[in-house]
Image (cartoon, rainbow, N blue to C red; front, top):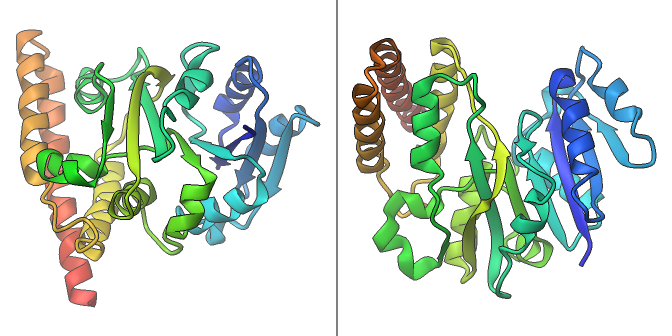
Amino acid sequence: MKVSLIIPTYNGEKYLKKLLNCLLNQGISVEILLVDSQSTDETVAVAKKFEGQVQVISIAKESFNHGATRNMAFRKCTGDIVIFMTQDALPVDNGAVERLLRGFSSEDIAAVYGRQIPYKESPEYEKMTRAFNYPEKKRIWREEDIETYGVKSYFFSNAFAAYRRTAWEQVGGFDEQILTNEDMLIAAKFLHQGFALAYVPDAQVYHSHKFSLREDYRRNYKIGYTMEQYKERLYGANSSQEGVRMVRFVTGNLLKKMKLINLFSFCCHVFVRLMANKMGKRAYRKKA
């Protein structure tokens, strides 16, 4: 089984050397393809130091699209299994990729994603959010489980995920022109066409964010827009109930630890996310 790994990059210089060194020490042979969107730092120069081990494709910044760019890279590589990572994710150890691949435990599993461990410097509320979204328990699910899991059925992350090429081809790949959540939407395609998905918590990467309120607004505006645009594929799944559960989990843990400044920051971000999500949905309805 041949394995390829794709990393979209933009100004990822500070992450890349450590990430590539780690990937090249995973103990299995992996074809690595880096797709760079006109970085203005030394991202490409760093990647080219790994000549013969890393292939670099440069594209125009304005042509990057979460779906179309990944489809292009998928077609360029040769793996039977194709792994996607983000530039700011880092395998926890040298066995992370191998454990991710073990998630393909049956032929009907189309895609597998791993667990995200927050970086030590992350805000406390981000650590709690990661703990909620990426639990310790392994999970395999299919279309018949959608009623049980609701919107969580479509939760998937390309920060560290692997795809079976034949399944990707069967569903027509990622949606081409999409603002965000390409991973969530292809997960829905897989489920509705009879495939299974898997979450493998022992395949771990360090990955977390420290968004400003403005960055959080922009991100969640796009999420709201996309959720509204594709609500039929998602069977109209409502994310509000899962969101309430997450907020309760995070606030409860922050209160137990008396992290009151973090609690205030978290509440501000929750408010911004809710408003952005609503505005994104409203914008799509107005356009449609």
